[in-house]
Length: 355
Image (cartoon, rainbow, N blue to C red; front, side, top):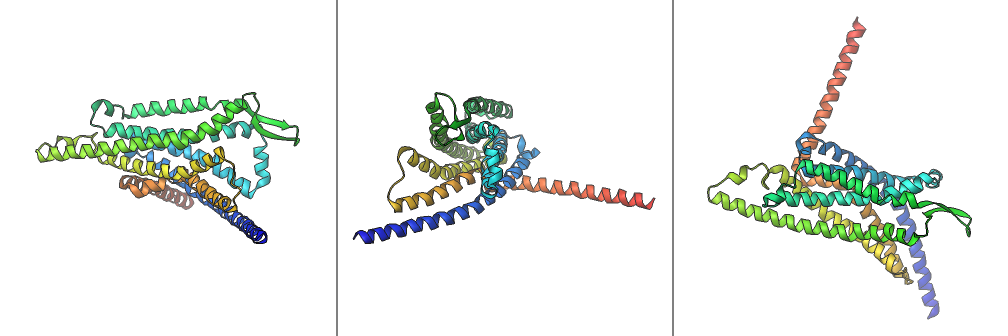
């Protein structure tokens, strides 16, 4: 019986080894694909939300800010992973510097929290805009969103300063190697902030707020539509012609994009939170089958977590005709400008040669 058990365990170990090798190879291609699609999407997102047709909407400023931060996240997370995977010597040179130890860890902590806050602020903005309460709707203004974006950036920039202050390379007397870690006596406090608080904030608090605002936005939309229907039936169409109402096409598309983004944000981030909590509260299982499932699920959670920062442009394109129209208009203007530039350059070059 023991020989059968031993053979089964050896078979499972071989399976785990093969699966890990396959997942590692697949992961190399996956992060490259995520990086390319994410960077292209973030740039197109930024270009579209800077379009005059959209940028005057207060919610678009939060979307724009989120896209800018996501672009930075892809450089800090995905690009560095790609360099590590395909050029380990160069990545070692980067990771061994004090600049990366301080600045790299600082951006790793601040950027995900910042993009989560901007998405939450966009949800709050749409909640205020969709409300029938005039006092709440006054909070959905472009000037307020500009101020809030700057304030939120300053808050996280200051809150994350503990990283460059406390982190540095420390020589390990046992292994005789240096590693980037907290160099103060309050290491447990900093580890709790950078680990437990980071995951709790992005994995529990933010999803709860997004879910709460999402439900209230849907409630406001239904309430507003019932009111519009009542006004139409009574012969009063004044509500339909309001520039700030829920019937406004731009606001409706912003709400649609936001609700889909919020739903996918919660779904994509949930596996990562589960994996972190499992590793934080319990040791890895000694059961080989459970370990195999944990490895597979860890890779899936990692891809979904990175995909959360890469998906926004493609979600916006699929869910909003307004976004597609603005993007198409921007592309047409770009092509026309360059076509005119090429024609003028060719004309002047031909004219100069003839002279």
